[in-house]
Amino acid sequence: MNVILKGTSDLENIDLHRVAGGALRRVSAAPPSRRVRRAAVLVSMRTLSVSPFSFPFGSVMRVREALRLQTLPFLSCAPAGGMELFPTVLERTPRSSSGVVWYASAAELDFPEPPDGLSALVWPAPLPLVSQVGGTGVTLWADEENLCSLLWSEGRPVLCRWRSRSAGSAESEFAWYDRYCRAQELERGASFALDATDPGSLEALGGIVRESLARYPWIGTVNLSRTALEGAVGLERSVRLLTRVAGWALLLGMLVLTGGVLKWHQARGGAEAARLRSEALYREAFDAERTGRIANPVTLARDRIAELRGNDAEGRSLEDALAELGSVFSENPSMDVTLDVLRYNAEGLDCTGSAPDMSTVLTFRKAWEGRAALSQLDNTQSVPGLGYRFDLRVRW
Image (spheres, helix red, strand yellow):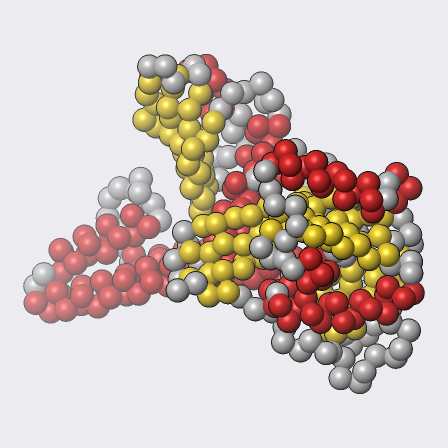
């Protein structure tokens, strides 16, 4: 059974703000209630886009990693400062998740801070207007400088659009959506525009937002703030570090167990077999090329694990690995390589892909020289009509 994710249920205690002229303005002229603990900031973002996703796993962290892999070419070609992504999971089970992902330029994420003591949600300005079109249609926010709109289908955003107010009007934007929906064979639905320069419209906004949150609670989970982004990225890094440490701790436990078995075998006269096993475990985990007898493999393993914990920065995060891969493609724009499978861990990347000829495969491998300690081609095959298939192993 699918679980539809919900946001905040504290609908009455949100203080609405909007950004105008680079400053934060409260929407309501009335003073906020003492019970208010959260601010919602409505913003018009020029670079904002939205796209649906669906994956066969439920982990939010895996969703973020999968979305970055899917959008690698887009992110690698982004302007200086890069693009950031904000997944909104709408439905989730232990084995699946679906929702929408918001993309925005990192340069647009610097918003004025809300009043002290309030945690802030940052929403695309037309987002909380969805109740006025019944979940299908176009919601449009107009302020002093911007026309920002969202196209909705069955309660989900499917398209963002921004125009300068001096270059258009609500009517011209709705006409554009008419043409777009006809061309894409989409249901057009209703239209609703709110003019933020009209005090009467702003007074009605609070009731509209409460109605939207009541009908579409997941809106309360949307937060396009830099604070939310840094929190998500920090959590991912912490989980990755804990996973690595747990893995090494498990290996250490195995080696300690092997050490205990060694003592038992010594008492029983089987010390040699246990010693060889502990040495084999050490080689498998740390030093596959080491030959000869290894003295005190358990102690050596402890030292190596301590070293890894103290030097975790030497590993590459997923973001760093994707940045390197993006640079490989951006610095070789004529390189016709298609990647079908990309596996990541802290030690490197494993790429499976294809190219029209062997020289292109070698160019791709050579592009990693100087970026990684090892770039090795494995299992290269000529496929009639398809060029060459290859596996490339990259290690930091």
